[in-house]
Length: 65
Ligand SMILES: [Zn+2]
Image 1 (cartoon, rainbow, N blue to C red):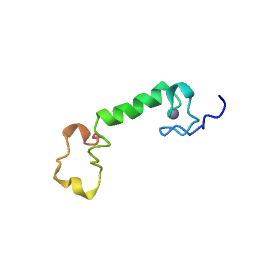
Image 2 (cartoon, protein in one colour; image 1 turned 60 degrees about the vertical axis):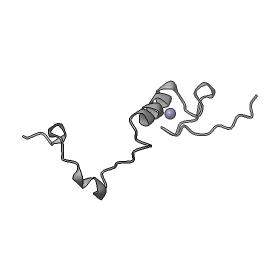
Image 3 (tube, rainbow, N blue to C red; image 1 turned 60 degrees about the horizontal axis):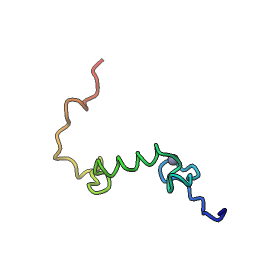
Image 4 (cartoon, helix red, strand yellow; image 1 turned 90 degrees about the vertical axis):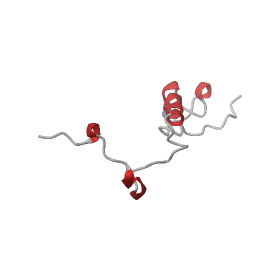
C-alpha cells in the first residue's frame, strides 16, 4: 500500500510515520497529547490582553542579577 498520503507531522512538520499517524514519531504524538491534557486547546489562555487579572507568580518573575 503505497498510496498513503504523507501528511506532515502537525507538531514538527516532518513527514508522518505510518505507525504514528498523523505524527512522525511517538514523541510528537505525546506532545500533542500533553497539549490536550494541559488544556491548551480547550482553554486558550494566552498572553493576550485578556489575562490581565492573573497575578504573576513569583516563579515566573525574571531572575534578579
Ligand atoms: Zn513530528
